[in-house]
Image (cartoon, rainbow, N blue to C red; front, side, top):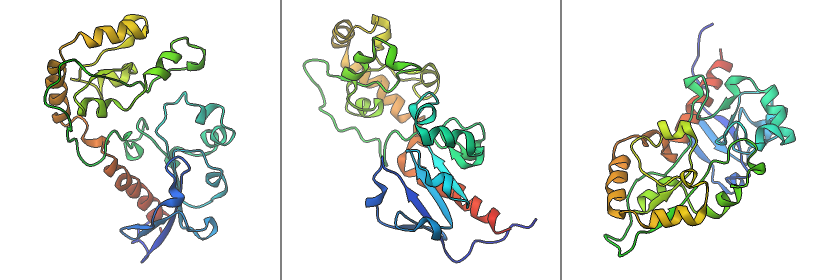
Length: 247
């Protein structure tokens, strides 16, 4: 079957509660107009970002669900729509950072546009930014979840950019990939004790942490996690789906 060119214009409906897509302006990438105002029945394609949406179940044309949560998240196991999506969508209708097919592998964004480092050149005392985005399976049954809730301030990348000593408990796969070359204080090393963790962090050499983590920022390891690269990647996938439909 021969692949043909796209039409003059396609219309892709965009849906996301988390990212307040209803407030977005329409935008065009190539031959596709992306808009939250395109009615589902008039759309050529559907793009759902983050939240499970029953529109993915109702729409019969090319569609894509981009998720950024880990596999144990409630979106996929307890959310009534999310559970159905996991069962009923095929692999080419989902995009996420760990997709087994590289064509649908879209990294979790960690920053937008620049890795500038707005910070005070030097300080008298170490500053600690405490961040934690990993609860693991059955997080709600673990006593240290309260530590997690107390310790979340911002993403690891923003803590580093600010010149802080990050306090972070990362998944093992993140340690060996995304965080390779970075330095931080892990609460797990202190039995998730907030006092022991913070006391240790405050006694570290902040400038040494800055030097190591600045080199990490400049290493290029974060290049694919720029938020500005996410939509072009999703557009590439949607474009491919529309071309396939035109065969």
